[in-house]
Length: 456
Image (cartoon, rainbow, N blue to C red; front, side, top):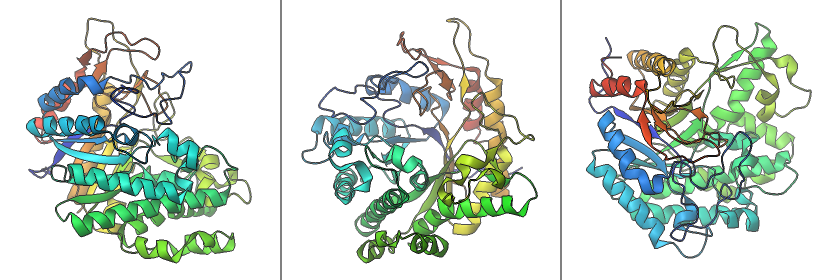
């Protein structure tokens, strides 16, 4: 039986807008999420699970579970309300207090600096990360956070799921408010985010040698839908443009030659400013992290002629009849999880850190009995078994973080889509009492962590 390392990281992963609430308290400025209204199947973002006030309770649950790691995000507009200019000391104090209590509980913090919630001022004034001004402002903010917290926080990420800026998500997550959503705009955003990451990674490596910083991507294993060679070609090329190009930037500081050739052919190479490339060329990563939830099969016949590779998956995903899926069509594939870990390990030879994994399921509480979520136990057990297989085959996997293991609104704001082993008592449109109630999976996970994965 494969044993996990004694210093293996077990933990929880979240974002600020999905946890904190307190959207207008103590000097926080508005982010692009704060102005989004509630929808039929989604909450607004004003309260979330009120972790701004209740985080001691959540830390106590994580400690009881045996977790030794918590990845959270700093809300840029909480510590710097306009994303430029003066910093908000009350916001900074909140994160100092959070970190102090995590460390007191024996929980190592990891800070993610940006998880899609652009300060509204930066979005409205500069149109988000398409602007080099926003890159410069982000670097100022990030350096300030490293100076504030770098003596206590040893693990850092710049951007959540950075490869999403290579697809249509580049517009949705970068603060881009207006424009034609042209291919040139997409590649400019992708490049600017890579530049911002490089500047912070280089800053950390030069001035904070005790800190580790890694690249982070959203990954799902991709399969050709059939034995048609064109299906395999779609998978290979899509991965090169939306995964491997960024992986190369994280580890060698060089763009993929195939991506550069495409940029030249499509008159996008003016984006590749020599001064930017000089900064990016210095980039290195101490580890590679990723989120993983599902896999997908791609059918080349569904891709319209002339579609840029960055968008191929938007058209070509088809159901994989060998796999079961949740209500939202996310197919459950622990073998894909193994494949992703091995691919990253073999390509980079770096420590690999899965920092998001889980299954979203519609759940409600009857006010009395624990939620029987055997499906969640099965999901995590099978993915942990796949992780152990990867370690046996040579991968250096340093931890396993579940996503939102204390329930939070989903990425689209849907409170009904729950990932947690702890139920939070609220709905999309009724805050109720926000009580935290362990599910059956809580007790299972506690046993797993306390035996360092030996009992599953």
